[in-house]
Image 1 (spheres, rainbow, N blue to C red):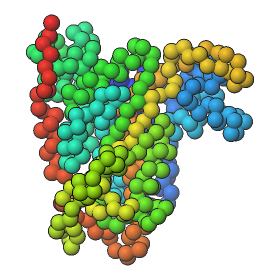
Image 2 (image 1 turned 60 degrees about the vertical axis):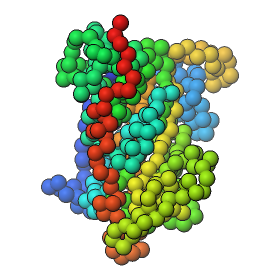
Image 3 (image 1 turned 60 degrees about the horizontal axis):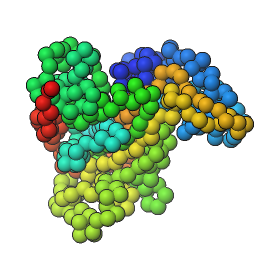
Image 4 (image 1 turned 90 degrees about the vertical axis):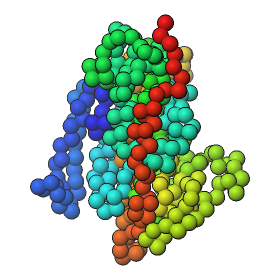
Length: 398
């Protein structure tokens, strides 16, 4: 919940919520009791009047209109069930599921920001990270920049400085605050040169009172073999439903996704070799970890696309609920980009889908599910090596 909370840096909404969770029931002395676990998080920094001008006109791009037509009423402040605030419950429940998956199968889920607007992780770096995923700690560490507002630069943990205007690397850069002293910006993109460009773009959009979207990449290591059911309950179908149930999500792809649609079969087929535990291992992973909707034990790799936040402060020429012309400007403290806060949401939903699938398969087998053991994990070295590499393009400081 700390990684999801509002107000964690200047890249997100300025609304400051601690999102402290209180466990009401279901645990004792640090262990579950087998009864339902009830958790509660209180809102502390809400401003209902920020949404006062949406009472007459629905926000373009938001569910205000469809909720009003469907139910004849709607939540007047913030969006109610259409608000991203409801994802607190998903993250909290997902944390419990993830704890069980790690304990039972050493299964690990990592999600990072791979694109924001037109800024993408370089393709070669994206592929390396997907085959040797960073840990969650590495994502948070390497994806954190420090900012010197006075001298107009970002600095990463390795001391490399970047222009605050466009994120381009500076050499050597102005004298100023160190990484330890600067105000922290959490991008959750584990490649500092790309993270700097993302941070610069988000800050630009905040000044322009606009917003943008992007994509996150998720890789699950330690996957059991055999999860997913034929036809309607294929694992990627279950994952797609879970991901697209999250607010603002618009796209889902697994493995090579749409790229595989233009490939040859001879290029796209993942050839088999001898694995471990009596299982086979694929030499490549274009499929993303499933075959016929059933997990193969390879890394589970998928991406989720997220649209721009619809609540923006720019004047928008729209109309009222009655169809009369109206200029709407949504004032308040809104995210110019929700991507830096999205990974915990995706990780939580992934954990719940996988725990359901594991329990279903264990009931069928009457025994723990098989995995590829160490072969089902990456080496865990790529993220640090790539993050520490000097940027390929260096712009001289004027």
